[in-house]
Amino acid sequence: MAKYVCQVCGYVFEGDFDALDEDWTCPMCGVGKQFFEKAEQAEREETVYIDVDDDNPSITRDPSKCVKCGNCKSVCRFKQGVYGHYDIQKCKCKTVCIDCGQCSVACPSGAISYKNHYLALEKLMKDKSKVFVFQTAPSVRVSLAEEFGGEKGEICTGKVVAALRALGANYVFDTTFGADMTIMEEAHELVERLKSGKNLPMFTSCCPGWVKFAEIFFPEKLHLLSTCKSPISMLGSMIKTYWASQMGIDSKNIVSVAITPCTAKKAEALRENDYDFVLPVRELADWMKQRGINFKNLQNSAYDSLMGYGSGAGVIFGTSGGVMEAALRSAHYFLTGENLKELEFKSVRSLDGFIESEVSVGGKKLKVAVVSGLVNVRKVLADIDKGKHYDFVEVMACLGGCLAGGGQPKNINVTNEEARKKRSTSIYALDENSQVRFCHENPEIKQLYSNFLKNFGSPLLHTHYTDRSDILG
Image 1 (cartoon, rainbow, N blue to C red):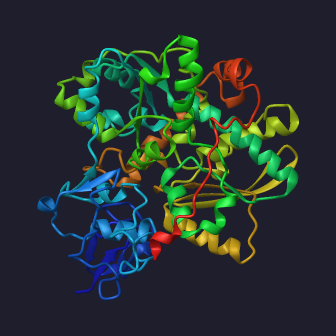
Image 2: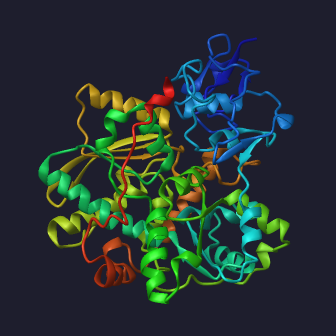
């Protein structure tokens, strides 16, 4: 009997594959039939795993737990487009890794996991001379409850903040504020590029997995990336400058901690030096369980002021298409001085890996694309090389965006596709119910620019990129 192998997660279907309905999806990861190949044609090596170098800043591998299923290699090859695109014999390192952690999500035995940093943080928190400032990424509020028996996509913002206070946080801010900053800078940057006609299409830059992927495999395209730091880095930078000065706190005494859906942020923290510790959702949950915190019984707590308020546009950063939509809302304002009346760009909302659209912003027709899962960005870049035109491209390393990041809860009883949809639905609901739905209308953002940043383009909010293709040999 013929066997068919899912090229994303490694699930093996045995039987009459042709008799399956066209809308049938993989019961493990939710992708369509087109991602399956006959076993004898599949490149997946059943007993070969992905090596993880000891100095990897984001993930680690315990060989004693490995069941040699091959899922990690399948995801890295067919979902992320990394493995198979380099010659391991020529590399200066054993494994080329973009730190996305999708291999850890696909690993059924826990052999690949996040690199533990909460133990070092917990030890440091005994130093009472330090001020511990936490921030939580937008998608964390629709996923952490799952680690404690909650529904997929359950909104638990107040409990997340309460949990961090119970763990010893002195202050807790919302990374959504950082997302609003990112859009202020990125939308302005997009408008300037559109006016000059240079360095188009502009690619988003808030995903560290995508940034590292571009630096390694497509360094000739780095000039197309926005120079904006990620929301977490922007907020981290403001915590140690603007906020510290407002509070009269020496920045040397601040320990900045980010709670993220993403393992690649651990590498970004080392790269940008804007924040000190990164705990993905699964790591935060493990820390809470170790400390005996009963998540369900926590009373809601609010973010601290000054940088604790984020717009609905900032919240949707957590899902694929959200950065694009938020940027277009503010780009229209920067071009016209007026807000959009129809502010939702539903034509750029997709969890399937790729969608393109033509949108009207400020009287301009823009060709845009939203890409997630880096194997898909290879196709987009190839099309651009062949002459296809885009003005603006959003890229997220993980299929579906941050809500499906490598540090998010694993899905045991539902498909990845179902979990993505439920988390995304909750994120858009948060936007729809927000009193402020434009980043440029966030009152705390206005205060920041008026009192501190003054103008766009502060070096505190922008970065540069490095050609790292030499590691390919």
